[in-house]
Length: 415
Image (cartoon, rainbow, N blue to C red; front, side, top):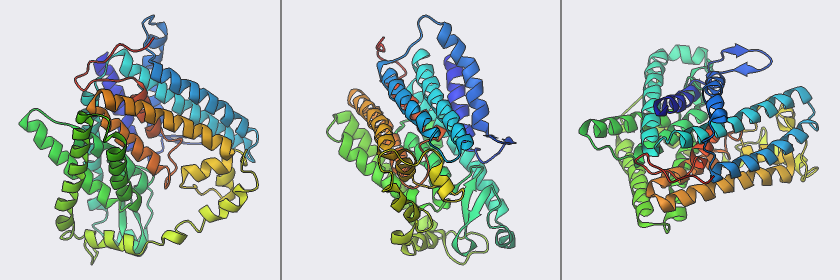
């Protein structure tokens, strides 16, 4: 069953790299992850429910309790929505998300899935998926005229300023792909393979992932990578000696990647482009209009927030206000739709998961990986809608599964 649990978690993570592939486009869109979730529910739920020794850790119970309170509030907000039909679909998505957290948390605890083993597997899955995306990306943009004629084809790339193609892969957004890759990079940086083959694969995989993240040309992802590392140093720096050691490895890996990457990226040019990849990154930062980055939607929402600051405007209200556009800021989305009450409930869940991750880092230095991953999620929510995304809840379930040692053995969970 350990192999089955690992296979399910790896398949769930892989499905997120293909969330731009629509399997069914009806009233409710079906993407690969939805199929994987249903498959996992049929595989794990019956055994967990029928097994008298089913493991539900104290940490997971706490997360489930907060999630139920949150779900109740979201359900109430659905009835206040200006579009009840679309609001109900969002409630369904949240139920799926909570189910994801429970499946991952119980699956890891029930079958004692080791953190180190799982992180290596997810790292490999992400490296292979990113390598495929990069190969298809280079082949697709080899004809610059094709990019100019179709700057937003739906998959593989999304052309930005000057029709410069940003790697999108098979996801629905270059920024989202960068977040997935960041999480995989974290797994690779804190791992320590024992064999030469493992070390070679680690560095090769990290190279692919770093390149993939760069080719998304996501400013937010680059900033998040650095800020999350800084947060880890500040948060866990005083926790334990082993945690400090892992933190140094994490920060050192990011710094080394930058030292190696800068000169290499300065020599690489994409087909049909007269500027290097490094030049493009510099352009993205120097030309960024930080003060007016969200003039089209963020600032159009803020005045209305003050009209109903406590209860909000109801589910999907922000999206309708923006004529179907995503808010691209989870916190603003929450406070507009669900008010300060909703924002505080979501914040309580976020902080609770942080506290669990901190305890894990204190007991086992490798738990720093949890703190870093969750920091990536929390920071990413400021520039992309992540609160209803499966990756947020997969990581939450991973953390709430209990304190697990890197060798695969774990403490006896709280009954």
